[in-house]
Length: 112
Figure 1 (cartoon, rainbow, N blue to C red):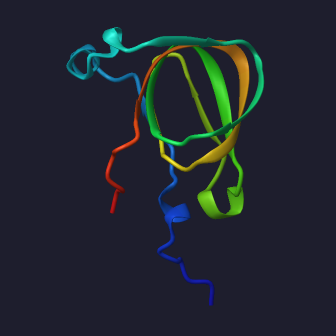
Figure 2: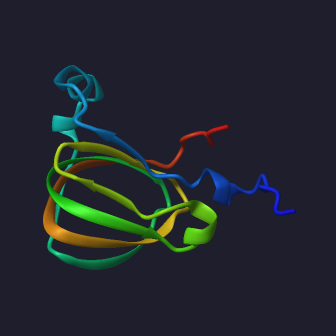
């Protein structure tokens, strides 16, 4: 029987919140976060810290490196608040150029 192990790969889930409220965005201080743009193309990424980002524009499909362990492909776009876990290796397929506010948190405790 295939049992879920308690290794870290089971916690590497991308969390997408569609259209968070203005008050939540304000509470997080998103407008003071750095901004980054990504042109349309594929990117091989490894996250050495947890990233929280808010997409102002764009569209992305994320393919985790070990899809069979980590779940399905994740899609998000303009207006989404996204949390990407520390340790995730993935491919970002940016189909519509992205503008995002972002912050990294390397000291975040592991979720249980």
